[in-house]
Amino acid sequence: MTYIVPNTFIENKDVNLRVLDNLYALNYSTQKKSDFISFRTTMHCFIILLEGSKVIHFKDQDFFVEENEVCFLTQNNYFMSERLAKNSHYKSLVIYFDDKFIFEFLEKHKIEVLSSSQEDIVNVKYLDDTFLKNSIEMLKEYSNENLSTSLLKLKIEEILLHTLRINKRNFHAYLQAIKRTSGNRNKFILESNIDLIQNLDDMCKLTRLSPNQLRNYIKQEYKLSPKVWLDKKRLEQASMMLRNTDKTISQIASDIGYSTVSWFISQFKKHYSITPKEFRYKT
Image 1 (cartoon, rainbow, N blue to C red):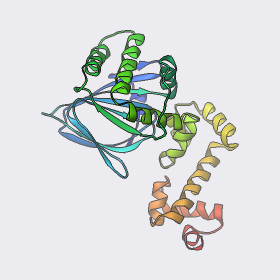
Image 2: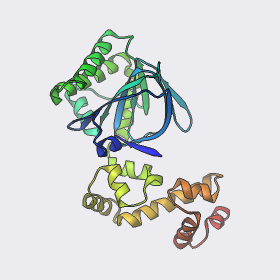
Image 3: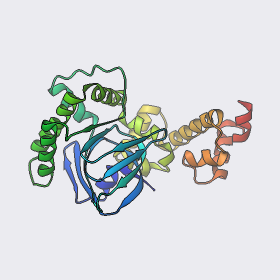
Image 4: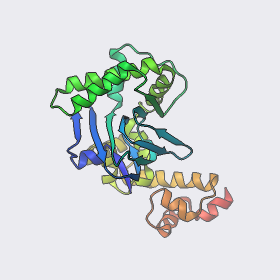
């Protein structure tokens, strides 16, 4: 099972999730020695690892996050998260934020993003810097108290400013990666999660739009209905995979979200007038 976050926590009204306008703060803890879960993120986030450690398994690399580190992730990262408890405890504080928050932050503090490179994941040790450590300690306290949204947001901004101060090059690259996808968040999320989408409800959950809003968005952006758009995008992705990978027809059908191979072959032939196998050897 793949968890979509923070959507899953929002839909389940998790008691450990605090809503802060366009921000979400999650206090997460477990007493399992370790677990291994698939995640996709529909918002940017940073994870403050308080106890234990984490291994984030991407397609082409593993990223280790140790206790007393902050890990920043851009939205729509897909990863396997392996959480390793310390003395049967794993604790983290996760802050989810959107483009609006980060651009208001940049404007408020007159920060110009200078990097030409992009980093989807950046981490920093906070024990090595007194100011960042103190800010994180205060955020932990704030998140457990019924304090105003404004105070929590200010503390989150303070953490970003200290991270920028002590790790300027990498954090600028992280901000540049956010800018890359800022033009059209919904398009980026939908097109990057084709394999998880089966119907209109799935699209709404991913984008956090109502059915009417989603239909209007798809019509405005693509001049199509949601169903026609989904079929078209799936088959476009399938054709690319047939040309450029050695994956079997069955693997491709599964990767792009078809429940059966026979249905995939039927839809592919209807669209391209040949079977996937014929397409692979003729193109």
